[in-house]
Length: 201
Image 1: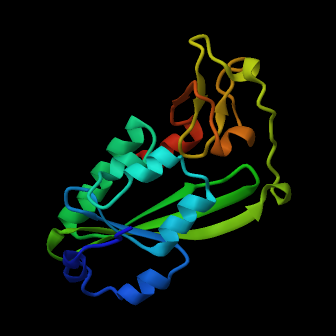
Image 2: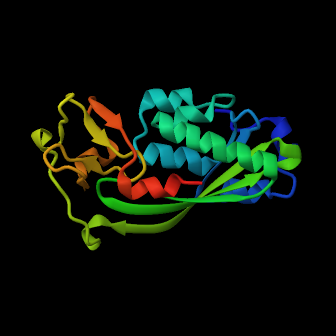
């Protein structure tokens, strides 16, 4: 699969392509229209290791919109605003996020760099923490549907931290490992109160 075009080399002057290619961290770049223009090998490894949905994986190609890689309308608008801001101002932006799986607690730092001549952004996702959930003081809950199915028959999960909203306890969100990577088909996304402050300007 093609991972970048010839124009990309001109756009990343100041960055070392060899370093980007050899990095163990997921790195990609977007054009000023916020379409994918580069993926490093680690991006593919990360997607495969984390069992990305095959349809979604096939839809994320050079020239496709970045929004295809993000779940939830609210998050799509948030990142669109921030990435456009980096392109406009030329200032680097940092964002920390949880990307845990059922077995592992993982926390990342996303650094968004402007490319030459406001042509796009380079995005590097650096792993800050990687610990087995058994070593974390994290209370876990079984995926008992009657506990989480809302009156409208939906299960609400935060797309940022992947906690699930309780239906029987107002304002309570639980860590349900079974749904961290594979959410139910009747899932709806909503930013939880704990994560909401992360998305304020």
